[in-house]
Image (cartoon, rainbow, N blue to C red; front, side):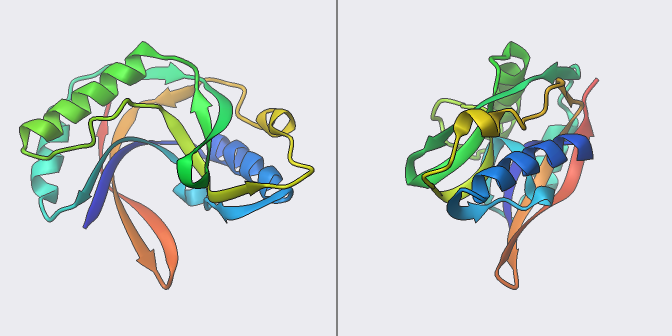
Length: 172
């Protein structure tokens, strides 16, 4: 299975993120994320059959629930169009704790700098009438609650990318 850990969103947040992606889609090109797939990746694990060990490690995490704000948009190499977050020490620390738990199991997660983001599109090509400023106005205005860590499975079903939560650990 192809696995990763993530923070998932409530429907209101997903709706706002999806609306921002839809607005960008209407004035550009790319492969835009399905509403049900919107999440913030904490640690990408990759292909493994060690789901039970990962569940066990995540179950031992004792971290308080917190809130963070979605803010800003940008692109990474290869045309990844994303919504970002305001700087948040608790988010960074949660990611670090999950990263260390997985590393202690012998996984080798990517050690690059953690840039919290929500992927809105891949292979993004902004059109002439695309306005990042206007699209940003559609992002959720209220803080987002981080109240659980999700273990997610990534798979293609009939050519469509699908993310499924297979385990969650409630934060304190």
